[in-house]
Length: 381
Image 1 (cartoon, rainbow, N blue to C red):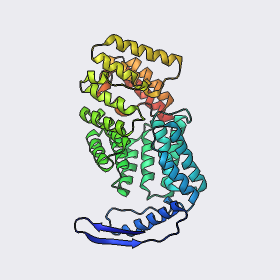
Image 2: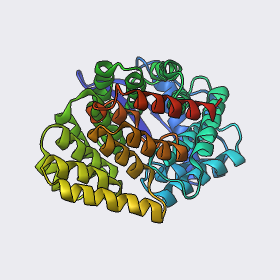
Image 3: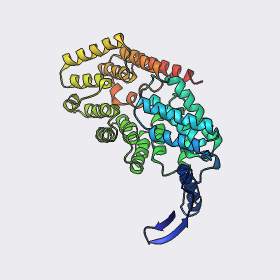
Image 4: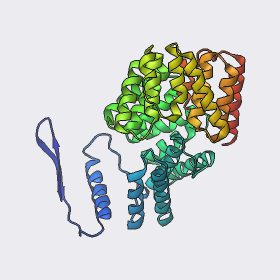
């Protein structure tokens, strides 16, 4: 294999080299060549940082297990994500010093609870495990950007010290300035601190770096735009996320909320939302004047909660429905139910958006949210 680095502005050859390896163990060959190329380019490309030796593995089975995990890790599907987690765990069993696998295991565990899954893994336990593996990754290789990013992202979900999470993201970004994923995490940390303008700029940069990533578009830019009141951006980016990843119904729900808050209730009410978005449909119907249908829909959803398990997102949106009505007590009651199940039951950017304007200053709501935050923090202290 011969590789060349060419300056596109002048067509000048900056660097080239050839590599010969046996055809067996292709994953190891790919990893070995990639390492040598990065080492060669480090002196040629400004800002390029070479991973520490501990970030990779010389164990072929561990590399294969990690590669299998990476194929599944971004799937909005509980079975596939659970398999990804088990693959990263297998990689670490085979090579306990595999820093990259530790960071990716942390991320996969966090994705599991962020997507609202909980059948196979208890969410609070999963997040504690995510924090553990992120700490392990940073300990194994302090020069691994992914490790710092994983630790910062996991820290953010504990509802404490967002400035510490931002410091982790700053360290990660210094190591990998062109990473769209790290910029998304950093944008979320900025939003946690209330720096929404800075967060939006970081998210827009991330989207430019990684335009095909649904999590960048929906979980990053669209949700941050909702908190910032940029509803045109919400609709556009959530729509793009849904097109990129139609398996996850949450993107359409975010898009519908963008239409609702932009004053396009008819458009919102006409969208086919999933079961988790039932309360959002009710909010949209109510905004069109169809209060009877809205009330009946909410009553049916609440009856379903009594008859069987109700998804954590649906609980959060029921809380939002009551917040829109100015009923702070009911809003808190449903949010408490959701957060009792998972620390990531309802994204903080929903709570800081205009959806909660009617109850935000109410003492009942403030006391209720303070209690929720204290209970979540206590589970990680």
